[in-house]
Image (cartoon, rainbow, N blue to C red; front, side, top):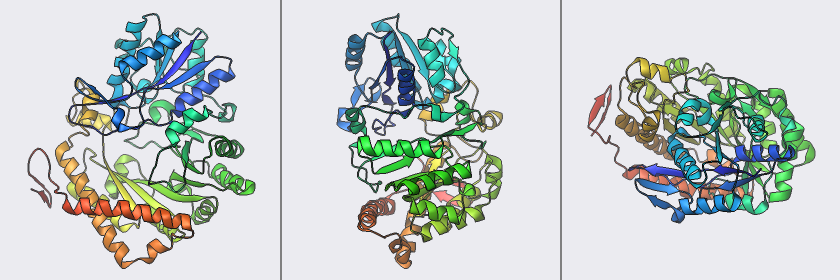
Length: 487
């Protein structure tokens, strides 16, 4: 039986377009290596592209990926019995359906199996749209069962209890290099890759879709297995920087410190960055993280308003977040915070509180995202309840529009608020660094640090110039809410 796994292309329809460079399909690598361990051969194909000039125009937009003709050549060459497709993002759901149709036109006997976050949230819809089988939840055991004859249309099997049982995700060096060999100004090393050391998150934040797959569970690899994978990537791919891709890497504090201890015990010299739940660490652990090679942390603050934080399920005190961020800066780590605006009951003043906290907490950079209420999240029913989304509305249309109306703002106004948030933060940070230059110089401990700072400075300068020249206004109409007016 011939099995192939597709990492699909992404398409942008209408006026919305942002180039998506293909990224390593870790989910397919885990499945492919698990199948190989079980004596089932599967080949992974990347349908995305690595250079914007290779985009393909389609009738209603732009495809970041291979043409139908190139995909048909793969199918002709492989003649598979089963094609597995990952679909992580609902916004690109239409691409998976088009790809399924193309495969069935080539050979209607090929079984198309779809998995991933979107599949776990909308299995019945995918079946109605032509997919043969859908994997709900974790993929390794479920996909293997399909290869071994499971014909259930929706397949959900128990999750792997011990993640150390799964093989290290390995790939051909040339396959890896097409992803890694790209200049990224935001990395400190010369060749970076991601690493996944745990699955799931026990938190239940109202906006999150992680639980669509993991159902509030969390499991982690042992420290030994994590550092084994790090050393494998260094040896076989020449990696000198890692980015942890976990949803919540430090849930188990003992395990997290064990990973740091194992890196230090083995003398592994690497740079790495990670998202971090600030309430799971302390100053002592931050010192050890710095010693083990950490240079950048991102913290999911999401809101700087107390009432909004209660609503979204962020119960941990902001005061502690500020302490952790400032200590991380003090010992020379770069810090980033993420923030979300556009919750259904969020007022102008509450959004301003989030912007103000981002400016006051000491973070080096702040990201501001407009909420897109996914149907698998706990916030979605609130939008239904308030009549902001009609149940018949297509969730993919909401995502393509880049947001949703709230009780106080329409989506165009929220986009203007997002732009204003970035502009306010950047201008504030420029004046802060000019008056507190030592906050930057204490991050420089080596020539590598200096070169990284120079790159970040150039990027920051271009952002400042764009911010100063940008006109912030909604695209639909002038508006006045609370104290804020844009014209």
